Image (cartoon, rainbow, N blue to C red; front, side, top):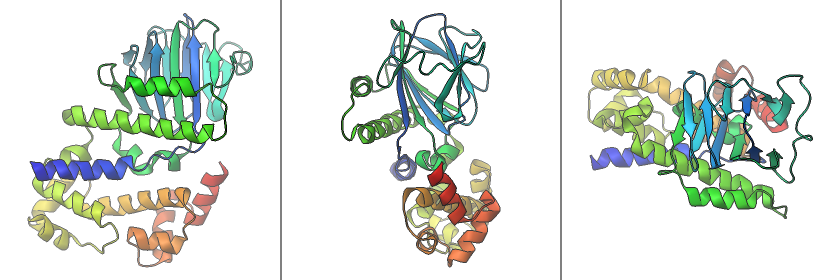
Length: 321
């Protein structure tokens, strides 16, 4: 049991080390009923918290979820969702890619019209106060983390870090040198804190990779792969070190994770490579070596099969976005 718990911690460490907000969109929204905001910005990851009042969030499954004061929701994109003061209310505001806010009725721009000062937007009174943070680039949110998350993570005020919400709310209207970097780091802390709490308390609803750690052989195999991703693994080597036969490991791994060990490893390597391309200026050759490819050419070929572009083109597109 202890080994399984340590493996879960290793995996969480690997995933939660990924978020790196860079100039993320952060806003305090003050809204008076009736209000309904349809979010279609297609961002990879958003964090919403209720600082005052309540809101209802309706995602891709069309089931409204209540967010009371102190609640925090993490929404995985690019799916659209609606936040409103009551379920079923038609949207009166659309949030589009690039942070554009328009009226759902006539399409007029609302950003300037509803501006209330530095990073504050909405109605002057604001019966409901929302904190909104959005990771706008895939590299910021970490592809491995995104692939591991359900579409919606929700914590009530009995679980969320309400003291952290107060700190962020106090810092949002501040304009000072280094403020954007400070807010980026606070958003990262809020995301990591929320996900860590959610994973710890909901093992039965956690993603397959998390439940897989409860299997001694598969958990051991995952830990080995994540600790030494650059090693030239074979299924035989992995099975031997996990203490199980090759056939048993392949069968149990595929049943829990939906793919065999080497397919999982290939996907993990490419996800890490994509993050490294966006988060560093390391050469493709260096990244290839770090994630287990013998040459930069082999990484480039595998990367292009999955992403449709070369690593250099992927990096240029993400950095210019």
